[in-house]
Length: 91
Length: 438
Image 1 (cartoon, chains in turn purple, brown):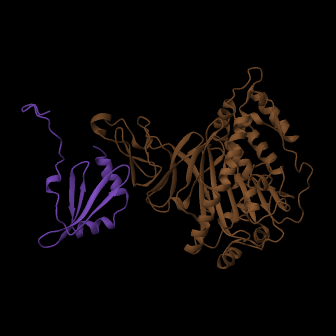
Image 2 (cartoon, chains in turn orange, cyan; image 1 turned 135 degrees about the vertical axis):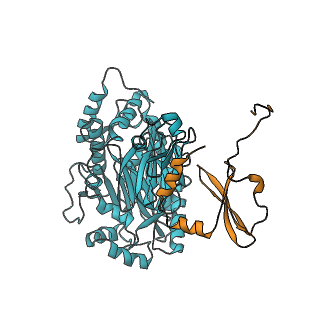
Image 3 (cartoon, chains in turn orange, red; image 1 turned 90 degrees about the horizontal axis):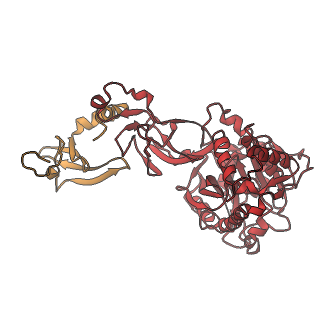
């Protein structure tokens, strides 16, 4: 509860916003899900290029990755993801 | 369901049972009794190598299935580097179930209670509010998922809860020769054809293990329709022909049924037969080429069956392989897991035909399967009756049989196929475990 307005509030993570989720995109959505998490993925056209949009409906968080970011992911060890989860596993 | 009589201790009953097996007797009570079930959990399933999964069920990094050893639910997962691990399916924080789905793919498992997160290899990596809550006292390396020892043979992944138990190779003790008859179908080996069918049955797991350790005796009776209608290429008058082979002191056994007119490798496509002659040793080829039905059990609760089934009466039909696991869930109650194995290198057409033959004969709606469970459920019910607690069954077929000197494989091979030798070996090993002397 918001102490001043006494209205219920929800926690929004600092990254991404559901309202900004693109209604029109080049390709997608693709849902990648297992019993622990689910994300919605689209290819998004920008004015001058393209990005991969990964959106987490449960968290409301979102990241837009360009080719350089994605390329750099391809040569990481799986342990990098473990390190990221170590930093913030949940919520 | 019975409880043990107060007048006789369970230990004394186990000793009497061991003595009875030597003279060809085995008590009905073993098949439906709370105390016997509890002792199996404590002394047998906690010590033996138990089947978990076929490697082709978890072919890619992150693939996992959940399975059981005794009453322990386990995650069997292939980690990001391709190595297979088995871990207790329980969060180390407060004991919640980690993987609720029975199969899936995940790089990490995250508990739905407080969010503890583990690598799929079982190491703890993520603890919410680590700094704020634990103030440096929690060492992640001390709180990984509880690990279970694993080992594999030709794609079969086994787990063992006893760190002191001998290695899997020693445990199988030569039975690998016979497992190859199911697993080396071509140079690429075999793969599962889809996930297992599984269902609960009011049947004791041991009845199934015994039946699949080579009970050719029941086939012309329980599955009579298959003979009469021509779907199963054997004859009641010759069905006793073949070998019964057991691995003494290990509990494993296999029945190798012959038919006088059954062609070598009948029911397999020619190109696959050519590959099998390369993947199997000359001794294995000598055994395999004469075999129509191979029905074997790996102690304690894993079985295989290879047999032909024809949609056209009178034809040889298609050879299929089923693998089954009998997971005990209570006295006289089990969960059956049934897979169809197909040769990886076979054509899609043959895989489809073999799977069709399997589903017609086995799996929940299979005709042979229904014949069997009708009988096994009744046996289990009978074993729970109070008057039956002191009743023994005869296991005296082949008591005086000498091993066949011509037989080219390992173990104790006798003729005919219709024989109790494999079962005496099975019960003897079972009783060793229950006596704590395995």
